[in-house]
Image 1 (cartoon, rainbow, N blue to C red):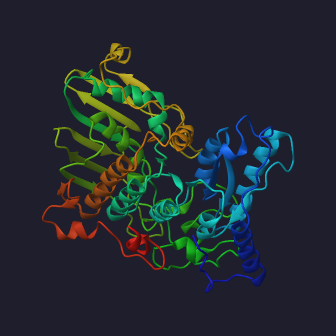
Image 2 (cartoon, rainbow, N blue to C red):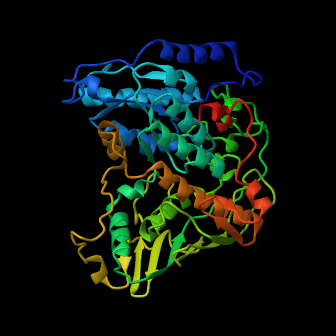
Image 3 (cartoon, rainbow, N blue to C red):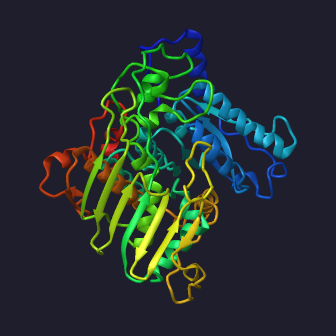
Length: 467
């Protein structure tokens, strides 16, 4: 996220201040403090983490999840909105001040340019909590800078991005985690273990319920706030006029408008779909593949700024004979159906952020027969990866250099199934998919949608010579 909006309104004072922030961060390493202040581990042994993106999901999910870990310290923050940058810096410094009882326990470095952050000494890993259209570029840049990565879901905006990211992370041997935190939640692992061990008999159908987004009206063009590097925020997407509901609220951390614009997010199909499709794949034992065919119908707004899908219905068929159905009218969660019964799993009343929808049923785990849920998994049966804290799992994996609960390939396959669904929604017809070659069969129009044009210098194209 290197600021490039020199053609947009910005005072000289703001430009110099923003530049100084980045330059100061690049010139000095993160502050080390005595181990007596921050736990039992010596400071040099703590994982030094930088937070990229200081918005809603960072403040409500990722920063708190990392800050509470004694194995790590947040030593730097980065954001293209200098108001959010300052708030993020204060959030971290205040946390450590409360923890240590010292007002100036830690000086957290701040950056508006992710390139400078990645060049700064002493940073071991980055947590990426930005809008979706930035995920792939930031992960690849961090990998090439030798950092371990935590990235919010979905992994990518396109199939081409996801494949490139997965290949690079594995080739460079970096520790990776994606924000599919349901893998670290007990009821989801329990449900998938029961399914994988045949408690439902032969599995034939999986139903996923996701929310839908409202449409919106036409929004007026607005002056770019002096605290926002807007042209850079657009990243690889086309240059378009600024309006607040395109980006994020300037005065709070409520749900941002970019989630409803398909230049920056494909809608709920990837926003929530990447969570539940991941769980469906875990239970179906299809984590490293995808469907063979898929068809979908969806409603898209005909006018207005917000243009992601509304109501939708998707059906996908897998090589193992299972049909995956995704529909906005189903309860929010995943229902596995076999010849001997069903299991439904959801977050229940749990929420990652305040604006998350809760399950309509309120149940985190249910079955056609309660005895299914109390069936013990024997020592010789399938036991899935056990993680009880998603951020801690990532940090412990950095220490051990062992894989975290979600690998880059698993993340790519759950995200790619959502993107394939989106392509089917846009085209409104049945598509045949080759999950090995990762291409649509005899369908040039669909294959053209596997990637997007990128506005230079942003996007993954800049790394073509490095991979």
